[in-house]
Image (cartoon, rainbow, N blue to C red):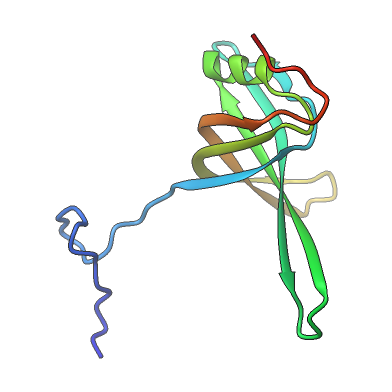
Length: 133
């Protein structure tokens, strides 16, 4: 067995035997109305997407776990997203993962992983909600 990681045959040529990729794509429900804030140059949109994972445990009992993923989107695309989606809409979102680190008021180091979105698609509106024109 080789110590060198293998790369797929269709992977781009590189000087190192692996290429880090930061690409995340998920589907889930919008958990809260997107919040719009502003920097000096761009709007910043934040919301949470709830991703449900269902499986059978060792006793064949159905288990549901929900992962909450914070999502951030910037600029005009973010504003379009904020105006188009509502809580409960089922969406597909793509982007990159980013870790934000800070120190809280008690001096403890904190961090949070979030999805910085670059693409989205509304897959299904929340039941009872009219389709946007």
